[in-house]
Length: 190
Image (cartoon, rainbow, N blue to C red; front, side):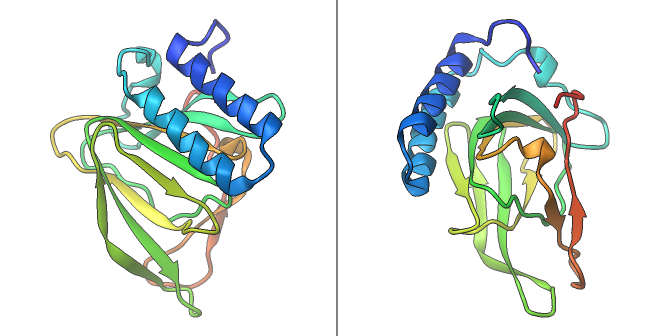
């Protein structure tokens, strides 16, 4: 995580979300207004430190950019190499995803009583400038992949907790019990 001053667009986003959490008690409003702040953040591409834009040859990377001192929210860059994808997973908290570079494809799921994930609707493709929402109240289970076979894609995520510390779940395609996990961060931040 950055210990130096944050880049101005990221600092403005952090200030906006902090002020929102300090003054607004309606979770739905917080979620939507964080989406507005995300649109402003991803409107410019040059602010992301190259250290938090580095792909790994095998695994997508989740770099912590900012964690609220009270763990009320976090900001993360997701860096996808060609062909990389997540397992089907949940978040358990609200999230706002903003596409910064490249493109992603997300498939939302519902989990049947027998534990089998069933796709909901069509896949959603996110291009730069697009913003998407997840939460336990509107849909929290999805799988995401880099939409591009020949380049890195990067999205910026804000979550309603320090997501690297949250106990979450992976859902096997074939069904059965969900597997718990805590993601941590690729840059070793807490």
